[in-house]
Length: 413
Picture 1 (cartoon, rainbow, N blue to C red):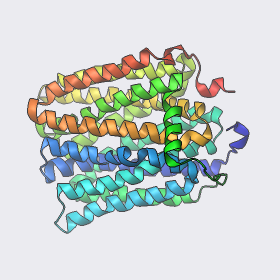
Picture 2 (picture 1 turned 120 degrees about the vertical axis):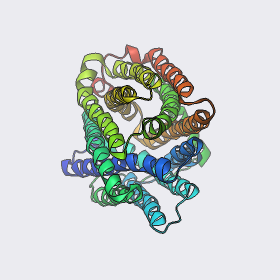
Picture 3 (picture 1 turned 45 degrees about the horizontal axis):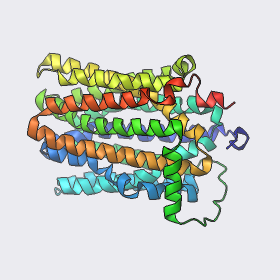
Picture 4 (picture 1 turned 180 degrees about the horizontal axis):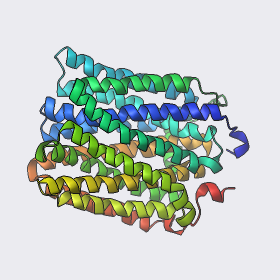
């Protein structure tokens, strides 16, 4: 799609941006509340923690590729609105079940499976709609702005989330996230955006899925980037099971201190997102991604050697700070590669394809991590996590990403 077709409507982008910020804020609260609910209130075993962490990702494996096809077949704004309403209802059942005194792990897993199913469509639509709201030459700035807002929400949200959990309890704090998705749906419904009526499709579902797979993996640069990201998600899915157990059980963090840990992650994510456009101009998007991916194994090495003392808590804060900095720096550059180098009529499928595989890898990593922590302990699991993060970085280093001096959006001008 040319820049001429992407008519800039600043009020619509502002609503889109505000909706993303509000839902990010709610998600940040749940990021604190959910582990407290699972680990401290429902007394889950490590494998059960892994199952809960994996539940919202499983639908990506089941319906992700199909969601991509229908995101390209249907208008994207209605998909985004209905997906947000579905997520609001899915999360809203959790505090209701808790108040009724019947909430169990399996019920929580079902609610998160439904939440994940709506998220499959929602994320495919939101990443595919943005290029219709801003010109492609402005996508790095737009993505960086969204990342900054998300990081700001992660900065304020966890601290407030920890306070809400302490005041109201973890299940009731999740209500905030449910309400945020209702507001998200209302704001996105008010967006004015030109979406052409989808043309009738002659190809069957299988053909369109294969087209999405081909667009994702046969591109010389995007294919390597996709593989590196898939490996990263295996490591991250495994890694994020360990900190909640380490912090809340081994180190004895309160809900408030755990919220502060995630707040520090949000602060450094904001810093990374703020630096992202300038780093892209200086190094090029590909090299920014490679640099960020080299940081992850270093950060998780600090977690692996953290002793069960106050010093271990400090190392955990430093490690999550590094992870936040790396994620904030690289995300907008990765997004703009896909949004710029992929034709508009294939954006839904490529976004859903890679997100489907990414989340499937994250689910597998979470399940494997939860199982192995119970068998061999968190230290050996974290050693494996470091190796997998290093493999993701090496895959990026050996790809054409290192040879691209300019951002895709700039080179397209």
